[in-house]
Image 1 (cartoon, rainbow over the protein chains, first blue to last red):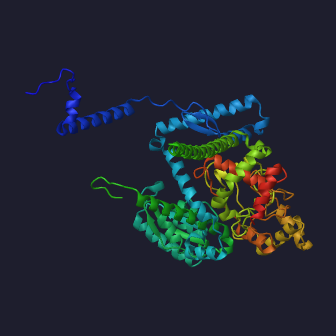
Image 2 (cartoon, chains in turn brown, purple):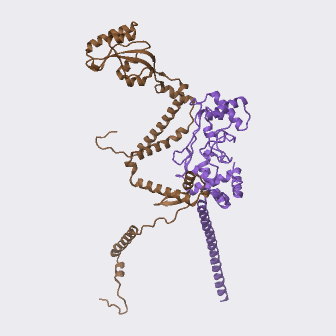
Image 3 (tube, each protein chain N blue to C red):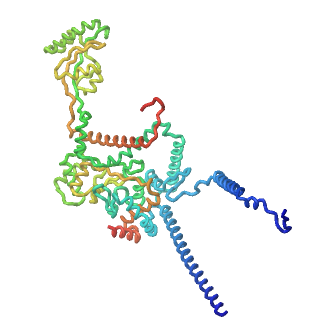
Length: 316
Length: 270
């Protein structure tokens, strides 16, 4: 057994560990891992950096880190008080800045409250704003007469002059309606006879008295636009009236309130409006169409880039 | 022995020379580094000062104007020249205004006004962009007939001091003041209103072309020019530099030597 020299120092434990390759490797790994964990921990637990202490150049204030532009501040001052920034009093400046900070706070609060999610008005405004933005390039393109004409030709039904009519609605009441005691069958026979006489040239007042017709009070006297007549007569009677020409008398029309006979005094049918007469409308409609198309294209693009999942059984 | 010691001495001398050279190179490098960092810091300070200085007083500070021009020139070439042209003279085909003629659609052409336009654009459909009005299409919509538009054109030629048909101009004036309702934006004297971008028709400056045919087309078809806002694309500091640069080129006299130099540089590039 070799004798240890009295002057030789005993090997330190770490020397012994490092001397052997088999113990050195795990030791170094452990040291590396410990250092890495330590660094990660220090990064996670380090103090959150304090908020920005000063307002960056170009801004007049920071509200929860969000800047209010100096340019906006000056513009607001001019808009509210009508004075240039250099001429505004300190009170005016302070009041405007106060309002702008309040506004920013409320906007930030709105974001926290997620108003776009919960408030219809906010959603509507946001949708309109995006659509308006994407349509600007299309609206900036010059419009020509040829484009307007082409649009007019392909959308003629949108540019009709609404018709009008002066029509009289005579009714024979039946079945207890307004104390009438005659039957439907009787009323229909009488109405057919009355229509025959009217067509033959009998005097209207005489026919009314003879058969006991009443005028439909719902229908205003004189010439009315088609839509107004339709509103008063209802779909079925209007459909009959629309087929009559000046001076014609309709066949009897049976409705729950009685049997009607229509006399058309004057008919101006609906017709396509002349291009020059509706240029302004065509221009407006054409530009609206450009807006719609731009908005649709934008939506398509958004949908292509979006990840949309539907619940089972749902379709859109 | 003597030879040996002399060899030692010459070796030491060579070493000293080598050290000296190395020290010299290091010193020069350090000096260049120091100068460069001083320059960078000075530019950074100037850029900060450019933003901190109220927009409308920047033009009176030649050092700031020079710095802004140096920074803005490549920015203008990259982002603005496509529409306004490398020489800032605009493009009648697209309606991009001439920026060096001293005539401004919006505001008075101050640094503040120019900066607002760059920030938020024109008809860019953001609430802060300049989008109150646009030139309506009087012919396309049938408000005025072609003959009437020609009369208004003659009146505008008269307003801008050019040869015109007196009789037609008289009729055009009636339309301008009456049924055409041009006065609503351009004012009874035709001098426009820079609050909402109505051009001064007496200045004889025409963004979309000033000959009779081009004016006719502007009235007949209307104009809906759009300029994008740059607040999302450029930094505030870059926008301020661009505004100062454009202002300096359009007001060479107001901005003193720096403005004149900047203006001259732009002109020289034409």
